[in-house]
Image (cartoon, rainbow, N blue to C red; front, side, top):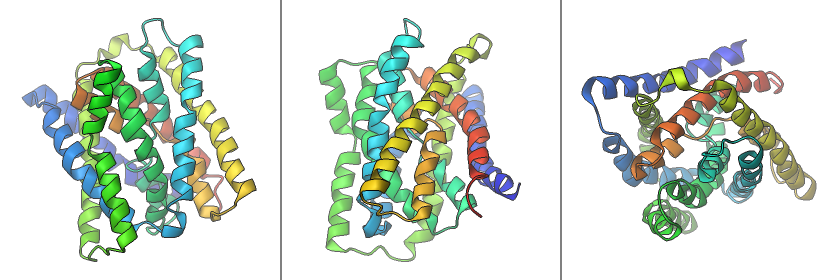
Length: 306
């Protein structure tokens, strides 16, 4: 019970900003780009560079590769769901994005803080790098394809600063540049602010959703299949790493096991807002997946050693 209470204590303050975004849109008609542009081009790059420089070098290769492969592999069940479960008018790229984006950082940080300790955040960041690399390249391209042609989607992908940020972060790590200790509390606050603002965007887009017409059984099938597929593929990929190399510690494997139960990343709504495509649908998927994760993650956490 203490684990469950700790999870909710850490998560609920951030998730409350969904309601804040909903209120601001209804009351003041705030535009989502006022939030999405500074997030994509300023706050997120700062966090990536800082977190990359602070990540444990011994895990900075294995963890990102494993998480990247899990995200990439989720395209397979997304294609299957598109054929067997999805409606005829469902955009296949929307399904792929919904299946492959995992909220590792902003949902994951309060989770690992409650389950492990503050030091576990640096390990989680290594895991996040793989999903972020996928989400800001292939994933962003898939979101763009819901609106644009292949050529224009590629052009949009190149505009996203993450690739260049990633290159800068690698350079900083290779050169051994150390961030000042005074930056740590600032980055902690920045991380929380980014997470909160991402949830605000979700809330803003929810104002355009007709909740009376939501087909909950349909979304339940989609998200349920996503979770089961992620569990299977994660078991194969994580198990393969364990059998072939076993380069990680027990706590690292426990964090990797959490991936299938994490919600769809709020970045998907952020990108949709920036591109002005399928904004309401993406936000709805994010919120529903968060609700599912709030049930599943505490259940899974009960099986972790104290």
